[in-house]
Amino acid sequence: MTDLDTTTIVGHDLVKRFGTFVAVDHINLEARAGEVVGFLGPNGAGKSTTIRMLCGLLRPTSGQALVAGYDVAREAEQVRRHIGYMSQKFSLYNDLRVIENIRFFGSMYDVPAAMLKEREAWVLEMAGLVGRESTVTGTLPSGWKQRLALGCAVLHRPPILFLDEPTSGVDPISRRQFWELIHSMAADGVTVLVTTHYMDEAEYCNRLILIFHGRIVASGSPSELKQQTMTGELLLIECDPLGRALDALQHVPDIRDLAVFGNALHVVVQHAQTAIPHLRGVLSGQGVTVSRIEPIHPSLEDVFVSLTAQLSAHRT
Amino acid sequence: MPPTVAVTDLTKRFPGITAVDRLTFEVQAGEIFGLVGPDGAGKTTALRMLAGVLTPDGGSATVAGADIIHDPETAKARLSYMPQRFGLYEDLTVEENIRFYADVFGVSRPERVERSQRLLDAAGMSPFTDRLAGKLSGGMKQKLGLVCALIHRPQVILLDEPTNGVDPVSRRDFWRILYSLLAEGICIVMSTSYLDEAERCHRVALLHQGHMLYCESPAELKTHLRGTVLSVVSGDARRIRTALVDADGVLHIWLVGDGVRLVVDDATRRIPELRAALRAAHLSFDRLEVVKPTIEDLFVAVTSTSSGETS
Image 1: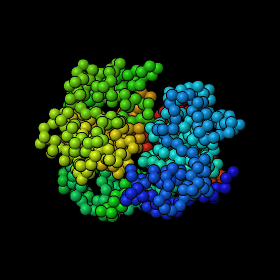
Image 2: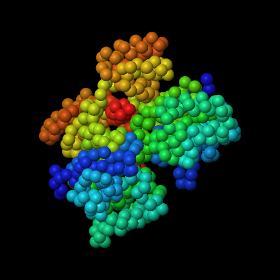
Image 3: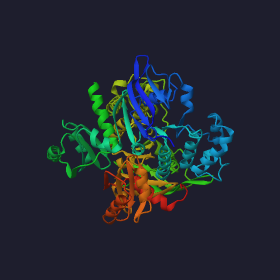
Image 4: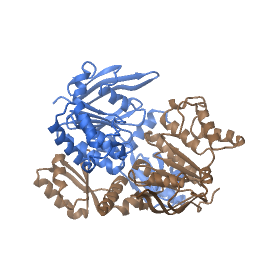
């Protein structure tokens, strides 16, 4: 049993420059054994660069990171032995049989022959693939394939697991089963780092770290982020015609963000109570019928967009 | 008004599998219709049939008044299909890509200039017209693909997972462009494997293994969920799950990052019972409350009773 208070990932003032471009700008982060941490950020925010540095694949320009106690710059080989990596898209060989994939990863990770038998059995059991050892991997339903990929990524029992959009395209039942497995590994002391664009996946993390322009701009549990980081309040407006409403609201200065959700609008304002009568007035002035206008709880996506929009505004 | 897209019993079989099984739906002008479901649900196959690039084994469909089986060329002239990998020329600039597609579709120069400017503005891409397509971020590439696909004013747009790999901010731009097109009477059929994206469509067809489970608005869909979704926020999620998994009235229970979610048959009756059960087990929690169901909740409830394949 691993001590759950152990810090297994520490990044201190991590910087990565590519020429004049600063991809990662003095990032500090920590993850403990047993934690499931989500890395969120727009394309180009520095997520993958950070992960690559933590995996020992990319040397930091400055700063330091320890992963499983090893320095990523000086002991990259040791770091790679102590991590597992899985992405939904690239992990498995589709034209190999299930058992061949497991053995391939076993040899890649130098799993000792004595241990491999037991680990093979564990993967087959965990992925629900007992009796399907000879099935060609490409023909498996996506949920099974993904559990197999997970099994292959942790064949060597790494204390740290990196997941890159792990449940993209998978049906929700399989997704929930997948996260059950992840959380049970975390219960055994594995540290899990997940990168994703999708809020469906972010909801499953214990803690989220939001990266933007190479810096960490927010972190907390999904419910903390929803409660604290949103500046302003979110309103739902159901109205008709929507197009005219959109045009009318585009020019209201108090509105910080405006998005269409099917037959309704999501609008971010400073104070809901003062904005509601004002917006009603604006809309009815343009001949728009408002059937409903009320404050709602923000989703993680609303939080994400609100934060990044705010920060973009500061930069320009 | 007749529907812009009418699909009746559309079927496609591949060896050993019926990829699309008697799919039936209609889409009106000015509507965004979503084909929603996980990989393997049949979304891409359905879109390819509508785009006239794959011949159905059964059923029929008309797109903008043209029959896709008997008159595919007319249908193709009136629609635009954006596959998952849209063919951008990476060594051409943004503007050159747009000009190329405008020429292919026979769009006149003044029309191209006016339209591309409007679309690029909406996409937030006007400052980047001289950039090579190969140098654009994933989100920008997708937006450029959409601009190219729209340059000839199609009546119907078919989009296959257009926001895959696109971050939430770019995704909002993308949706803004789509909504701005509706005023022109365009009709949009798109696929997504993310059920949260379905919320943005006017109506969705929920697909699973080639079958259509439901076809309704997102709000109507959620009324089909039997029971109420509850959220328990707690740092002790795993033990809470163990304590409640066999409790009376709990239909589903699963872990999330900051607690557990569960579906119960009768919230008024079960909430006090669950609170008591947690107290008896000495498990602490911050909140236990009713939350709005998602389309994912419905999907899980429906597919877990109808199919053993994923278990």
